[in-house]
Image (tube, rainbow, N blue to C red; front, side, top):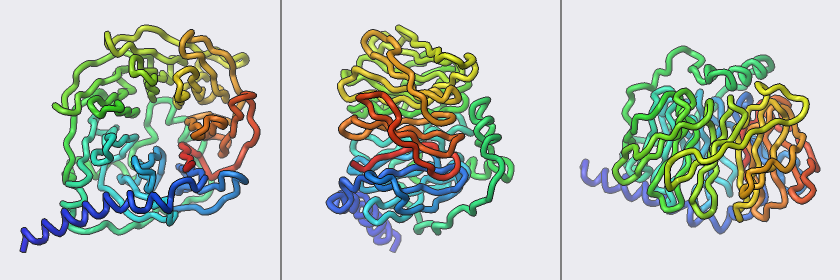
Amino acid sequence: MKTIRTMLQWIGAGTLLAASAVSTTWAAGTGYLFVSSEKDHAVSVLDGDSYALVKQIRTAARPRHLQFTPDRSRIYVACGDGDAIDVIDVARLELVDRIGPIGDPEAFEFSPDGETLYISLEDDAQLGILNLRAYFAGREEKPELTVAEVTEGGGDDDDAEEDEEGGEEDEDEEGENNDNGVEIEGMSTVEVGEEPEGILVSPDGKTVFVTSEVANMVHVVDTASASIRANIVAGNRPRRFALTPGGDSLWVTNELSGSVSVVDLDTMQVSDTVEFKPKGFRPEDVTPVGITMTGDGQTAFVALGRANHVAVVDVASRDVEDYILVGSRAWNTTLTRDESRLVVANGLSDDISVIDTATRRVVKSVPVGRVPYAVLIDD
């Protein structure tokens, strides 16, 4: 019986992974924007033309990082206080599955084939490597999809303040993370520096880059051996990544240094530093986190946190060409597929800014939940 059940579980897992490819026909190009809201415990769905609210999809507690599966039929959502990664069906606009318990997942990325999930496990100072086929096949049953209760008012500014001053916001509200030590089917780990966050998988899937906020390092992990190939010292509190199209350099935002470190991937060393000095702001207010690079690798957009601007950087010269005023605490950025618009999540003004990349000006500000964190665009 066990053998039969195992076979059925593997078939079920394969069906689940394959189903996303089938639903792509229905899901592709909806034009919707998906915005995670930390305090509303929901992902807001906006119409891509009018920016009107289409639906709020409730999730486990504190949704933050969002990412499409490679076929774009589903969205995975890291829910830090819910100790889970939620799964949203793009065509149905519904929460359909949940991966967990995973202690305080911070950020994640898929392997190019979509079968492995690389997760920064902040509390455990580890890179989690989750074989999705093994996970879905090995679990006894689908978890109950309970969602977090929404609390009214208070705490938004305080939580965001803590987020920028040492990561204390990620403590479980009920005390110590009670999922430490729980074994997840299909999960292996690699020890990295304290408070890992940013994750980037190389296009060939052979390398994973991980930032350690406390160690001020970028860890270069070989996926075949699941071992660290290099440790690169970056700036103070490195957060997120962008990779140039040719794969020769890696850009890393340093939140507390107010800069970006440019890493030469041939030498595995920082070759240059881009500093941000928008007028009228103290250095400690310049807290870059989100970064998005154009497809041709010519321009990088960097969200400057409490400096309330997005910096426009010429990648070749490393010159800061412009500062675009947006909302309060500009946190993460996303380009439309045609790169005509840049969407910025502003965590303290509870809105998103839509920037015309040709004129480099905000054309629309849209209120969207409490403490928006990340944006995806289904175009």
